[in-house]
Image (cartoon, rainbow, N blue to C red; front, side, top):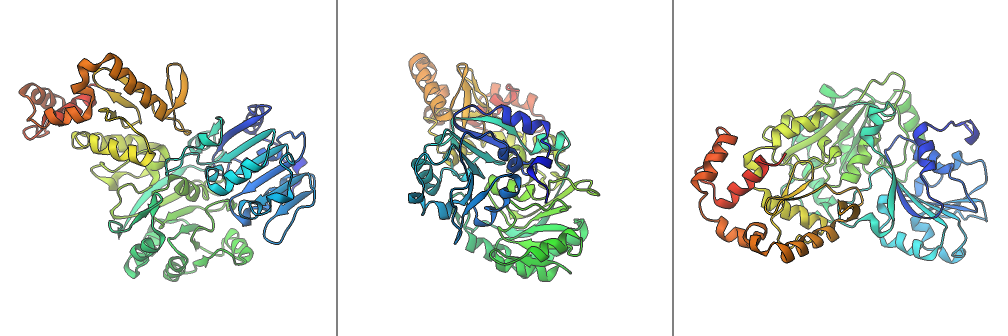
Length: 496
């Protein structure tokens, strides 16, 4: 086994350690495969360290990176005063009375995008560490709850794009396979598809055969396939010659070893390999588990991004269907929404080519006139109150108000916006802009107040509006536009 002393840190890992303040609560973003565990094992300690993991099977993994005794709080295991304690959140939250509040100098939360959950909060309220650091590959949460409730700031960010660009992660070639899923009637619960209904929609004989055909046509073994349920994993494995299904809670070391030797062409699983498993030889990842959760999607993709000898790139295959509004696919890694793309089947190729492809496919007048609805849905997902301001959301995430002219940059991973020389919570910025509009721009309220704009905007577009749009957007039918729709198009035409 490689000891801690034999592991040399990469320059960005050294940079990460140097960025850590002496005390406080901070978030560190490090893409899957960039070595966050070895990084946090080198954090200087003035006392004991506690490592909190989301899943019990991850608890033992950090131990190999420490040259000191490591205790465990997991299932039947109990720590006994070791310098480092690695714990599952499920076990630790029930055993807090075993530890004094000042028992740990440093607390590490692995997969810290889970940190706002009540179980984590109970742990944080119990302990009083000098330093609390959260490590995650995916700091964004789709439930609208910002991690700023736990962490003061993001002090280090190296995402999947940075890792690929700098040669630490595998390049990704992205493909779309239309399997024919119909998700239109699958309920959404807590921001994602309801598991039981999702399984019923995707775990069908015809769809599984279509996935097997996509595997045969596009995949380069060995492949890791993410499914909607355990039953789905087993059903799909039966359609792919040589594939093996794996489920949580069972011994699978021999399967993983055979997979690493190239003896198994594909492993199907449901939520087993989303976090914490090193499978560097994976050459293909197939997403047959539709999700609206970007954190989950990024974790699944990240299982295949590690470098390995003989591996030139990762092939990422998104299995899609006839209703994929809000579905995470490869462009989601850049924060791109492809709902309004004209020809979605064209959105494939090298990962870094996708933004330009999406921009061409989605930036069109048909999408611009729907901006009001999109902004409203986006604000609901984020739990933002926009105070009825007539914002236009640009493809890169900027928020634009045409009159008075105000542009807000896209929010960062902690839900903050640069405003008045400082990073502020997005909701506070929207509140301040609304206050500014009320105090200084009441005379322009018909333009910035969406409720007022909807009343006058229901009338047909003016000849002048139509003429400008016809010039800017050749071939677009302007005859049926109303004033508000024309205004949305003109806002986009004159904002670059």
